[in-house]
Image 1 (cartoon, helix red, strand yellow):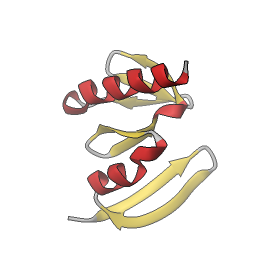
Image 2 (cartoon, helix red, strand yellow):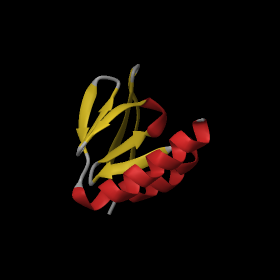
Image 3 (cartoon, helix red, strand yellow):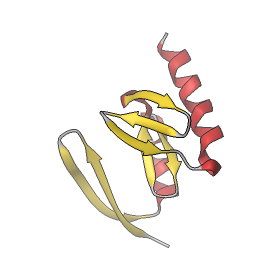
Length: 84
C-alpha cells in the first residue's frame, strides 16, 4: 500500500510522492540509502555516529528498529570499508 513519502535533507524537504518505503529503499539503494526503521531511510554518507540503537545523522538522532539493526549495521560496515 502506497503512502505519502517525504524526502528530507539538510536543505529541507525536497520531494513528496506516493510510494512504499520498501520501493523507495530499492529505488535509492544505489545512493547508499538503507532502512533504519519502519518509517525511515538513512543515507549512509551522512551518518555521524552510531551508539547502540541510535544513529546520529547531521546532529539528529534516529532510532534503529530491532528488525533493521543487523542489516543497517552490516550495510554501514560495508559502506565504511568501501570508503577507506
